[in-house]
Image (cartoon, rainbow over all chains, first blue to last red; front, top):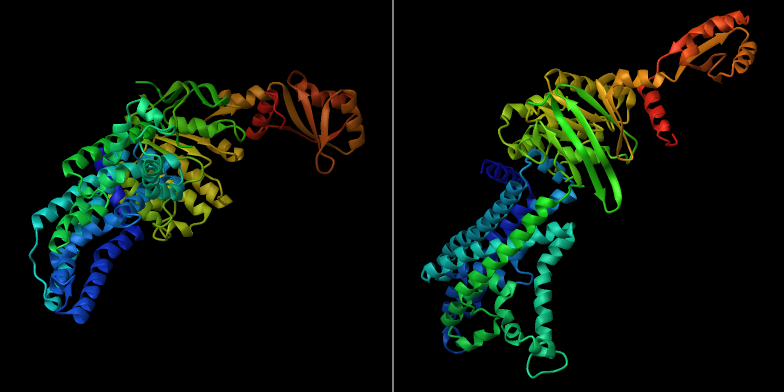
Amino acid sequence: MNAVANVVRAELFKLAHKKRTYVLAGLYWILYPALVLIVGNVIRVNLAGSFIDGNVPVGTLLHELASPFGLARVALVGPGYMSPSFYMIIIALVAALLIGEERSQNMWKTTLVAQPQRLAVLTGKFLVAWLAFAVLVIGATVFAFLFGALGTTFLGTGFSGDWSGLLTGMVMQVLFGAAGISFAFLLIFMLRNVALGIVSVFFLPALLEGLYMAYATLVGFQPVTAFNAVFQFLRLQNTLEELPRYFFTSNLYAPSRGLVGSVLTDLGIPAEAGGGLLFSTLPLSHSAMVMGGYFVVFALLLAWRFKRHDVA
Amino acid sequence: MSENAIEARGLTKRYGRKHAVSDLSFDVPFGRITGFLGPNGSGKTTTLRMLAGLIRPTAGRCTVLAGPVPGPTLRDVGTMIEEPSFYPYMSGRKNLIHAALLHGGVPASRIGEVLDFVHMDQAADKKVGAYSQGMRQRLGLARAMLWQPKVMLLDEPTNGLDPVGIAEIREALRAIAAQGVTILISSHILAELEKLANSVLVVERGRLLYDGTLSTLLNQLQGALVTYRLRSDDAHSLEETLRDMNLEFSRLDGDVLRVLVPQDGAGDLIGTLSARGIRLSEANREHDSLEDAYLRLLREDGRPV
């Protein structure tokens, strides 16, 4: 445990000396809520007293977007719908710093001599990446709340909202981040190239899932054709049709995307309209199991590879 | 407890079909400075990496401080393998703080001590990205000493240093060794190694050619031939006589001849020349340097040098 604690202390020291840490925090904690408040004020000034779709007052919209609760909720939901997701941008950049840089700066030979216990090095780096992710996400919620509180003074918004649901979503998103971090560590370590690793972290899951969707759309699994006969023969068609429920991205962002339902309800948008928002209705318990599985697989692969790695 | 700080037995590393190191066995006793010699690509760095636990041997095993590698005894090892690397966006001091945190148990005051020891205290707060190669070498040595290791594995530690820097590092290593630290050091600057090392390991194509003290190596290789420097007022007659005696010689600057004489006839050379009427104004027996011995050793191994 001492060795892991030493690695955590050292890597936190390094993280604190990297500009990208502060850039990410600045973007997520300051720029984003400030922009939303500005947009909120523009809406208030130009559309005060109007109704959206004839039945939702603009004040409600402002509350959903720019109140302390609304801002904090959008801080969690927004990153999950960006492409590439801001969550993955955080994870990939931190992983590049902690894993990729060791290779690009030829530092493994130094790190693994200063701390020869390889699993302790890996565990310590993982914990630091997870901690950085948690601090950025929790910090974004706190800053969103503070900016929202400021907004109450000129937007006429209040503090009400389902805070317990929001905090549960935030904690779950932080926990799910562990699978994303192990995935990013594995790819950046295996590909031995930081830039290629980052690009792969962003796009490999989406590429694989996109290929599946293209196949499902163009060929399909029913009825039997020359292209899908093999799956039918192997009795895999049901599994393949169920596959999207186990996709990495849709489950990774399930806690944040799950919060979209409450936004729609509050804005009076029919629930079925939310179907267009990809797999936002996956049960959280299912996603937790799926991400737990991904985490175990990626972590074991990484640990096995890292322990055998020759530092050339 | 073993009297050796480092033991290697049948150490082998293959990359595909290429043997980087083949069946290397040697011991490095406690408290000694051992030179590690060999031409480029002979397997020195690969061996040092295996001893530091950075790469896994394909076969064989090694122990450091009586513990298997990899293992907990590596905490007492300091290394500087090839060009030292650092985080360029941090200062030299912060790089050392990072390494100290990573290792654990290093008092804060130790950072200043090692910086002072390698004369880097003035530049310690500049970013490493702005350092010259010599400064990086010094900082690398400071980092290798940071946790007061009992064994140091150094690969070309004087690379890129000017003569003053080389002399300073030499003195620093002597001072470290005087504290009982075992040092295994590879270097291309053989004259430096000669001034520093108690014993040498010579490797070539991944195989061990020699393992022993420096003086034994020199004596062993001097056994075959002895070198004399001779000068005569009548250089022409001297050359004729040497040809008559079937001795190999070469002309150095001026009238000085460098003559190779078989060991068994070396004692009679001056007398024989005198008997043949050659009056010598200068006659000196040369001692082989480590470089001569090293080059001869490689020649004997069939390598063109």
